[in-house]
Length: 137
Image 1: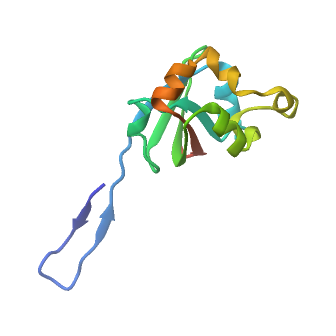
Image 2: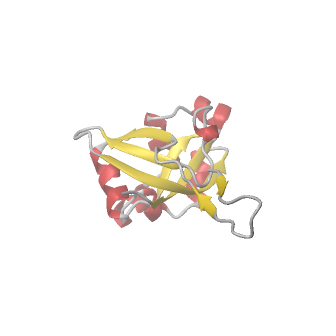
Image 3: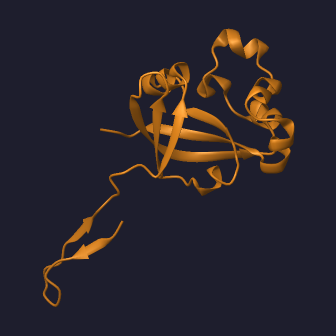
């Protein structure tokens, strides 16, 4: 982003805001979570807060790719919710916004994420809920 001044040294000045047209981060998603983000049902993506995710900032653009179809979806990061573990995250965030259905929430437990991120990884890096808003096309 940069400001461009036109007509310097005169009484006429214009400020122009240029934004980056490309996504700043790229992530692959299975079809179900991809479609939930696309439809607006899921607004918080859960991830390990590893070195790659530590670079994400509010205002950044994430481009998600559907692993089945190759279709892409651009979203903007609204906020990062950081926690030491999925146990803390599950207690603090609204799970409906994380892609769980009403039926899932009754049985949702932090160990569900162990399939993707081990307890050792969670302890080392912590976890993050990336709050998103649709901001594409």
